[in-house]
Image (cartoon, rainbow, N blue to C red; front, top):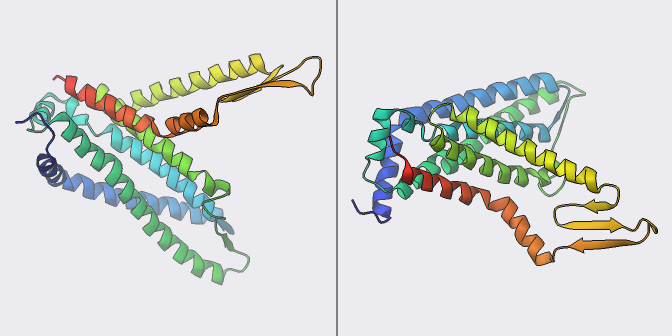
Length: 266
């Protein structure tokens, strides 16, 4: 086998992956439909008499994070068993091709299928609500203002965070052969809380004289409260750092996953 990347070999690997796991994918889609249907049924039951579209997107995000991270943590579970691990590592394809194939199914196709399932269930639920509201005076449904303001305006940031977290769980499935979901969750939670505690301590230390965020700091003059010194990064650097914070995690975690796969031994 050539060690160079091959689109032809990648295509064959994708087909092989699909047919070998077609039953798992089918049952997963059916389970996803069923769970979303149960959640929307519960939502219709407890939200009466007033329904808000924003609540359906809370359901969307919660289900996406939960199902997506679980699915990602199972991506390389074959490496936890010697027989399956040896078989998988022995497949005539490069580690990059195997990673791309896994990302295609666990990240891209999963996200598309999840969105389609959500839209189908939501459409059915809203169709039922239209009939229900017309027959029950005083019941109402309020649509979201849009995707440019309010909760709709920040959904994209949750999606940025989702793909970053999902790629972290993908990495965890390579590093931890067993209980990867639990271990990755614990490590991620410790890192997040440690960072939040560190920021809170800095904020408490600087609160008396300085108003600050990640990119700017305003230090007040103790003698004259209307006078202050402003320290700030240039707009170009701020913009670059904002883009890095939003988008750098996914390729970074994928790169570390690929590097770890190259070193993997069973």
